[in-house]
Length: 196
Image 1: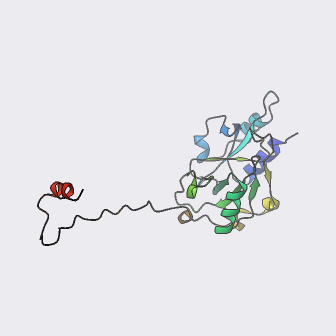
Image 2: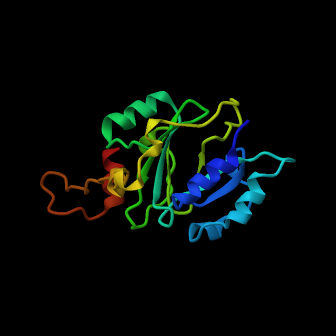
Image 3: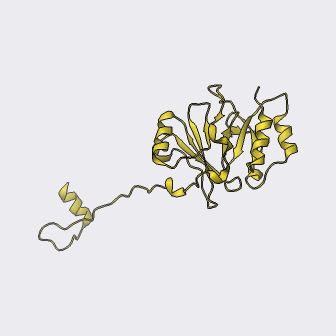
């Protein structure tokens, strides 16, 4: 049996707000927990109930001090690990991917989806990350921490938002040029008609 309450209190001790989730979606209003921790009484009420067993979500962002990179596939996991700083705080998800936990810098870090055109999502300010020992709603597999869970957040790399800020493709339109012998284009539309 999953001990959700044990893990919920463990996360609270680390200063990470937690909320119950149904599948991958928060099951309660959680906006306040972007700025404060839920009370132990409320957490006990959520996760000690016998009539319904929730998943467990951590509210990411500045208050928690967390940024989570969600890689949905093994291929995307290997790509991220090959291109960006490693963190000891890693979760193996129930869907076959990985969650990489980083320290929040204090500057705004927005949630993003499909980073670099891959199945990689960013969960930070205004986001949540499904955490162990949750059950993946499609596979029935359990989310699990790697060996680094005992490390302190101070030992986790600082997330740099410039890692994921990409430039929009630039479209360059060449200016119309005068035909040989002309000093200027007097009628752009007529010029286009002439060269078609």
